[in-house]
Image: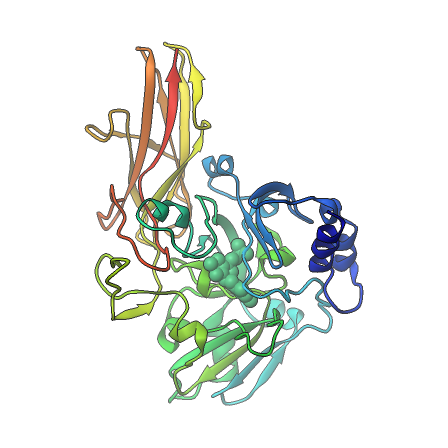
Amino acid sequence: MASRREFIKKGLILAGSMGIIDKVFASSNSSDISIEKYPVITKYPTKTEMILYADRPPLLETPRHYFSKAITPNEAFFVRWHLADIPTNVDINKWRLKIKGNVEREVELSMDDLKTKFEPVSFYAVNQCSGNGRSNFQEKQLVAGIQWKHGAMGNALWTGVRLADVLNYAGVKCDSIEVAFNGLDKAPYPKTPDVIRSLPIDKCLYEDLILAYEMNGEDIPLLNGYPLRLIVPGWYATHWIKSLSEITVLNEELKNFWMKKAYHLPDNACHGEEPDNLAKRRRVISFMNVKSVIGAPEDNTVVKTGQVIKISGVAFDGGYGIKDVLISFDNGKTWKQTALGPDLGRYSFREWFYNFRPTKKGSYKVMVKAVNKNNETQPYEVKWNKGGYMWNGIDSITINVV
Ligand SMILES: Nc1nc2c(c(=O)[nH]1)N[C@H]1C(S)=C(S)[C@@H](COP(=O)(O)O)O[C@H]1N2
Ligand SMILES: [Mo]
């Protein structure tokens, strides 16, 4: 066990001088967790109790009960990094955002510059990993990757500046076609490709993308991308580069591992393929599909006949907004409308609830599906894809009435 602890500890204290955050990480008792097998429920430094899948880099999932509220607290917000060498200490006085490449003038902006030179913008938006719910594909065929359940997602109020304002400040040259984003995390070995992703120039100049420095009214937690992260509302988190340090305007396509191989989907209407017949045409993942999750009560809750139990959760999509959330107690034969909570914007979680008052004893399977304003809904059977992306099946729990 000792050697394993040593290993975990080393994973937390990364090379470099000890800053405040390093000390927080180092002094945390998570260096003492004896992990034989993942996933485990644990309190990782700076976070509350969450589901830990690995610790180098840390991969943390948000427990289900948080999904009965529209806003996910920072301390319970899921964490995903690809590279082991993540920033554990950022000196904000030295940190700069570089805008370079195909621009009129290369600029370096301090956090102060960002906060004083540009107009602040705030909105709620769901950050969801492309592989959220991947474990559900196991029924057909296990997909490689983190076996997330429902909680590789969260909704927060993001505050920052418009990406377009910052790009225009540097002056985008007319022949530019893409913008690439790079964060402070580094590849541990020279052969591992650094996480650098690009987006089409039109998306960067004309859509609601922001560079956020606040999450739910506070500095973004280090594990979620302090001091600055890209927010691409409606699109999967894959694009939401954390701990941003460099933005490069390009007049050619970025052709690295992240843009040509990783996070690609079958390029067809249902994003489906067969394990023994993979799609040949593939494309980069983009918009999120419509989805709902039950936050409360817990699975297998016991209630008495006649007792009212509140069933609640959240629903969201890629930006049309939620029209309805429907609930079924008879295996999907009939569906009833749930009540929707306040509308916090088209990129946000929308709360829903239903007061259930069972009159007969028995075991009830409760199923929930959302419908968005484009009339898209959740399928009974999600089409399989080899990356295990975009799972949006119908969520269910069991309530036992005695
Ligand atoms: N710099 C950097 N940004 C990144 C990543 C990364 O590995 N490095 N991973 C992306 C992926 S795949 C996900 S799911 C989200 C996770 O965001 P969170 O940790 O704040 O929940 O960050 C995205 N941004
Ligand atoms: Mo992800």
